[in-house]
Length: 312
Image 1 (cartoon, rainbow, N blue to C red):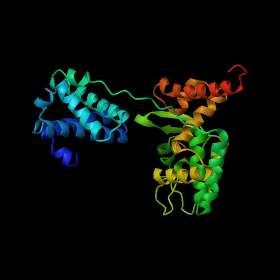
Image 2 (cartoon, rainbow, N blue to C red):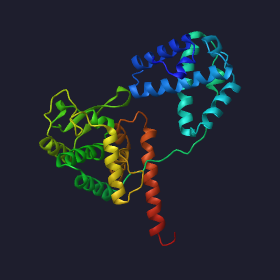
Image 3 (cartoon, rainbow, N blue to C red):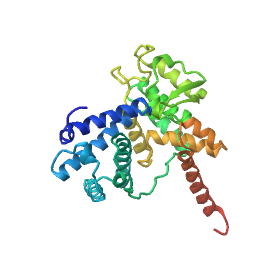
Image 4 (cartoon, helix red, strand yellow):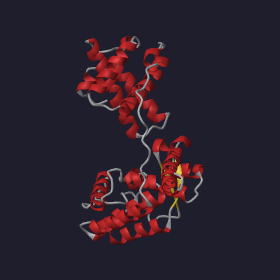
């Protein structure tokens, strides 16, 4: 574990325990590297706070004696650093997962930590784009790039997000060996979960157009989508492209690359798609995650009802 001011405030025993837990999450639970990084940061911050709060590095014995008062002090301090309730809930979840494992390993009672309640927050519903808006956005991207091949690239990426429901990380993880795109892609998503995604002809055509225009030779083991200097395309570059396009079109700030994936799900629902099938296509572990889209659809339907019904 790399040394930072926070990790230096933690006892060697606590650092070793945290690293062992992270290795366990990676090897046995299949946690993605982004998840591991988030877990590490959240738990390190928590342990460093406890060390500073009590005036000395917390060994494993001291960690077993954390009280409800200690937990309240940590949550108050975290909120005082402009951390919102949603982010605090995520941090608390990571701390609880670590403590649950540590308590089983060391044989102590973790009730003070596990009983701590996360702050309440309003769950944000996905903000999909209307079909026309999604099309206009892709058209805008196509005409806004500095070079024709870059325009073809950006269109291909966004078409995969909207037409196949890929996460931006999944689209950018495609390699040269994946081209030309088959009718069905096997995508490795969050937590190493694999899913099968049909590829629409429009997405295949968009990627083929990009490949014909791209000035860099494709190799099986290199990134399919390239940056202007030939390296792997970054998510930040696509986010910037979307930001420029939404400004030109007057779209809200919620029109992000991830909104294209939300739009994929919502437009399938609008067309009568089965919720469980959409869950599989999106790679959601829980159906409740996918059900958020039905709430969006209900909001839209109620709006139509209120505007159209003669008695509304």
